[in-house]
Image (cartoon, rainbow, N blue to C red; front, side, top):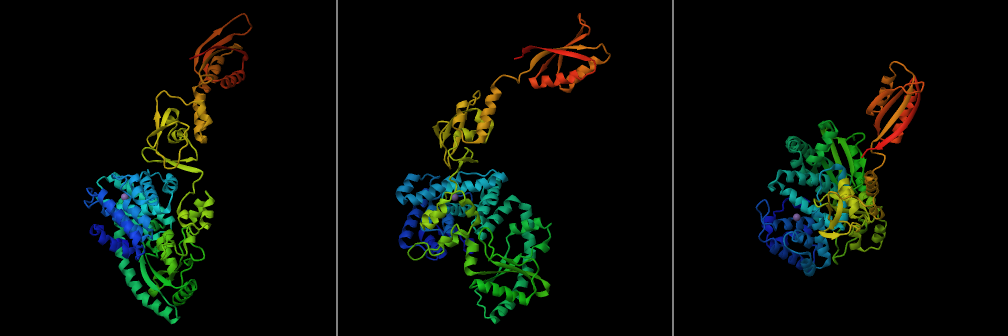
Length: 586
Ligand code: MN
């Protein structure tokens, strides 16, 4: 990843310069035939974007160039590099048909994937983030599409300062933090995750970012001085034990992850012991443990800080031994010990396994894709065939993401994601957006074409509901909707529309009572407790032995009527009640 930071795409606008840089970054991995194809993609992108500029004022071509080079650094294959060069051409005047004709199905498929993913916008609702992440995978259909998209986002973040709209800058940075950095993390691409987070941090929390940058600048030099003193001591101790050390390097923690750690620890810097850690790379797993022993013999370890991520890798596949020791002058110092293979995998994650041999076929270790990553494994439970695909050893097939057999992810016209079961219809979609949109649905468009309301949606569809003001749901919809939410909303609305019990009914009670002072007050009090308005009340002395009180009132339902009757019967002096329904008010 370090070779990403010194990229200057402005200087690579001609093919020869680009090819040289691509060769350097990819360690000349691509064959002559592949390079010829990449060159055609380069020239096509150059033609399409010729007149365009970035917000930064740079020629637009600098963007696809940066994305292609980052994709090469992530070990993507030649088709993906071509797709990275072409990734914005469909938006800017090229057509997918044209790309298919010129570059074939596979590259067109990848370009189409990136174009679709670009249409998805995250609205910053944190509980929606997980479904957004899944959605990206479902729409992308191929891990390479996701990685091209991560490369795209990396360059867009590096140039985000040039974006003229503050709200958009913030939205893009938020999305990077909540969605893309998290995806990089889950794919085990640790360096990329840290870089995306720090780039977004500056936009999302500018004050905190400035403060952190200042604090780190203050603290790092003393830490580096300390490590420079420690390094020769550890090198000598390992050499004395006959331990071949491949590399020892100091590694500074990223700003955002340090800030998060501070937040978890009451802003107490004493808890950030790994601000700068020493990385020791040795040839084998046995030597990792041996090196740990050597370090512990030199300096006492801090209890509770020895972590064996070799025996128990992190869910994203990260492997290393960590220990913090009381070093020179009692300075707490973190060591991270790993093999070269682990080191490589910790940097590149899922992409580390895409090493091509001379024949252009995936090298050994490819079978690890999907097995190492807990998150990917979790996704696999949605689709068991995936593991069978892996065993069939068809490399390209294993990159296809089809975990979501029973879920689909569709988009609102604004790009919001709606997560639905398979075969869900526009009516399901409408109710998931808003109950009123469901109730008033009169028609639907999928990808701008009219479809019937019982049309089966698929992942990536952009769905638009046409509503009419006085529209009501139809009971026929119950026969085809697939979601419980839509079904219950339809039933509910149909029931509400039916006139009966809910309308107030006027009733008259004839209550025969003992002639007692205060009995009228007690009776009206009983009505008041039920919040029933008495329309009229009068006392009549008929030929019976007792006076009769006539009360007219409106009540809402028979249950309420029974309750009030019971209450009134309990009043001292009430002899009997007769009721008469006068009318149902409309
Ligand atoms: Mn782009």
